[in-house]
Length: 172
Image 1: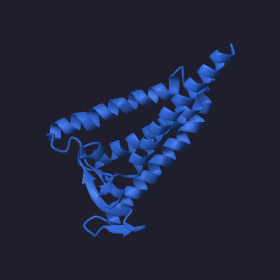
Image 2 (image 1 turned 30 degrees about the vertical axis):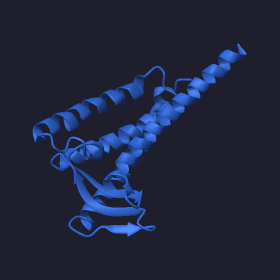
Image 3 (image 1 turned 180 degrees about the horizontal axis):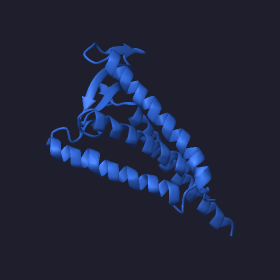
């Protein structure tokens, strides 16, 4: 069943608002306490915390592009995508609660990184790294975690929808 606009907003506003707030506060903390300082290691070097700025996208893709092209791709186009995503979340016909949660997380993470780029000369503050031995993630932030969780929920939600359709067709 498609949620009403009011119920969509009641889900979206807290997820997006709290998501952006937590991510932005974590970045303020990273700038204040990690910038120019050492990195820290926890849980047998599984988790590392250290300041980094990313001018590109996921795992630094696009870092070597010109500043003008990075602005077009990572600020202007991402801004348009986020606007489209927000409109879709508000009026999309095929919107269930799992999809709305997932897209709200993706929007929160994307918007928070968008704000970061706008306020930080095109860079996003990153400070988390995880791994075991030489097998490590790229450096990321809380907004990136929201985006990955949202993407995972989209995939899982779609799997559940397809599974439900197959079960419904089998019983008809």
